[in-house]
Image (cartoon, protein in one colour):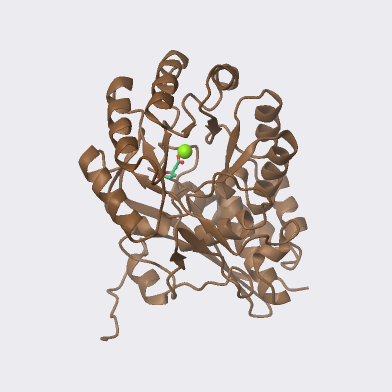
Length: 382
Ligand code: MUC
Ligand code: MG
């Protein structure tokens, strides 16, 4: 039985290409928790646990993800058969409640190792395997400035990188947000799909007003307009409005998916591997959606390359993916932390075909961006 012999957990801070303005935080950098497992046969696996804006998005922070892994998950992991991903995750769930992002990082690394051992991509260990080899990718316009957002949208459209735009709102008055979004819808009419994400910042009354106005200016989808636990309000808004409501923060695993689906609280689910508690739980969220007639979107926590590709493996197995994905996280960062750049082309992200996740970390970049870096990094000259 292969046993886990080494568990390296570290935080990597990489600047963003511009400030990313969300209702709850403005990001200038992304902090990714990377975990690297090595087993007694020398097989390595990598995983990522990443959130947004410290503790402003949810209950886990980069620091708490690292602490949960090092202090509470590591001892359980060391006693398990590393080849048995399901049994190992069940043992971890018995000793560690919640902490979905930390669990997702570990499960990702175990699946990476399992795929490498078997010589197959992670997608082939999930559901019935991949049904698509590339995924449509949205871009988030969140500079905070209308003209700059339009300019940025034009640039990525011309590069054939994105033709789905998500606009972050909820910080300003509803009418101001609608004016901002309306100008963007007008600029991209017939050329791109425009959606908004309120990140829970509206009351039900504001959402009623906002969803009606956003529908009139041409918005295709409204993400998490009200608080994540306001399931009744989400159901009323879904019943009252033509523009579909998508659940994001309200989804934190299969049980919440079942509750939302059975309350008709959302017509679309943003599946996120970290929020769900891992890829396997994310697959269960998707199955509940499919069985309930809820449509699917592949969400992101603005992970770097590791979490993005782990998500891509899962989303590639969804038979129906009506709303595409937003797996653009690495493109928001000034530096890619992988040894090979990801394949973004023709509005899609290619799902790697190599064993496991099919990616590797760039050792120099990791050494440079590690928060606990103690010595200066000497880069080889070109
Ligand atoms: C969220 O709430 O969906 C996804 C894209 C983005 O810009 O922020 C995230 C988080
Ligand atoms: Mg969201």
